[in-house]
Image (cartoon, rainbow, N blue to C red; front, side, top):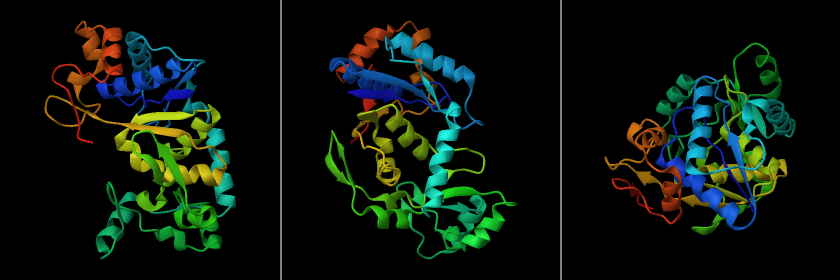
Length: 287
């Protein structure tokens, strides 16, 4: 059993992060396995070293240790670049020259724009550009890289993954459309980096929130086209704060640093979370 916790240092951790980390850590330790820590700091515009330091302090306060040094994604950019080059060479990735404003305009003008769980999807504008033309434009124009989901499905056929809470799930890679693999100002997307790093660490169980369930559909097809193993998944329930809204990093009252400053016993809190009990004022979101 190899599990992991993979926070992004873009803000302070909250109670929901603690539940995810505690759950993954407990599963690994209960089975004599390994627990890995990964710092997902690719977004240079939002990530801060102070938040990384806070993550380490919060985990220590909870009594969580990890095996081996933390994996830092910003130190693995060549690995992600090599994977993208491979997908592009296999005609499974294409350059996209559309800005966010361009995408918004096209979606607004379309009578049948495809939609995903978070709203309209990228309509595939640049997928239709001739390769020779794209090759010329990438030399001078800002661009990102997207996964050609239609081509990937044609290569892989039907796919599935297993989730501990809901059982076997048939993958629908179209749910998020042609996802970005490399942004204009980001060297790799969350999806690409996560599947590569999980495989490199030998992760056998991915513990994360229900809000990332849809991401697993597209990550499953990335695993297939890159020849990577598929771990077991556990998408756990999310936690709501006193205001009834799902916790977010903006919720200072739910921040672990705030709880620590208020004198909360971190290890006692971890034990409480392990058995599914939440502090007063917090509640589980509806499934």
